[in-house]
Length: 359
Image 1 (cartoon, helix red, strand yellow):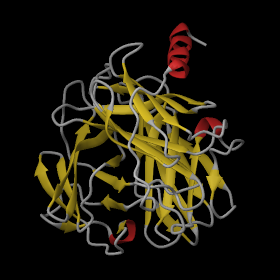
Image 2 (tube, helix red, strand yellow):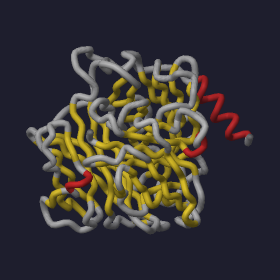
Image 3 (cartoon, one colour):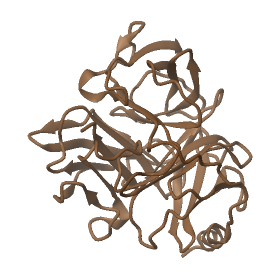
Image 4 (cartoon, one colour):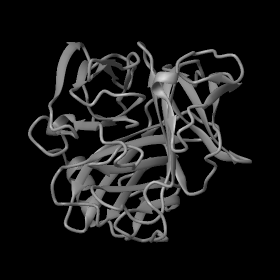
């Protein structure tokens, strides 16, 4: 283990909760959610998102997308406007590019998630891209089963949105080893095992950013997660970010429905509970090229579906989806998770991937 890794691990485990989330106890989890796949890199105004890969908590699949700048998209989820939520986005492209949250806001009854995408280059290069996107907000406690927590981390630490299904506090501490480093603590979310799944997405209103999980420590007091963030050139950089943790629940926090979901973490595959399939079936990984893995989630492929990917370790590397996932029979086929190094060259890398149906 390198000296930097030792320092990061010590600081992560030593992090304590500095800011507690206020968690009202009157609602199910989540209150409102939505997911979608933006399938047209240059869509006409108010284009309906892919109907096979979008759904909302109000059971009306009417989400649309409109261009709001070069490489920038305004996704509208009608009639689920809310506060205290987070968003995730994953680029879908066969070359080196990435997408981030630009901003999240409400417009009357509608929830808006604005997404900015970039082509990999030494300097900022906004560009068009397909992407998967989701939004979720929660209050109260799960009625039964699993666990769910999230934070929208601030640039200099702390958070502006937070939820913890155990009714305990979350915290975000900036710094420690250096710029672009955030220690996240989710109290009461740990079983002491590497189980569940983590997703993290950078958010910035004017600069390219990407974030990943560098260390994961499921300790006795909760989940300790070290997030590292980078700029376009792969240098450490401060940013806002959205992080969520879910265990035996869908990535957006819901359960029953959906009853069909699955996730895995490659360092724990296949031998730990971080490799989970709600149907009791198997998940598989097949290497299909340099930095490319085909992932299959068996017996959970039904109705409208959603996938998110987050990179684990290895500096400024990052992972995306190479193409839209497909449902063949009851098997979800993700071909492929595709990963790149800091220079935008394909290379193998570890990651978290989470899949959910809407039923």
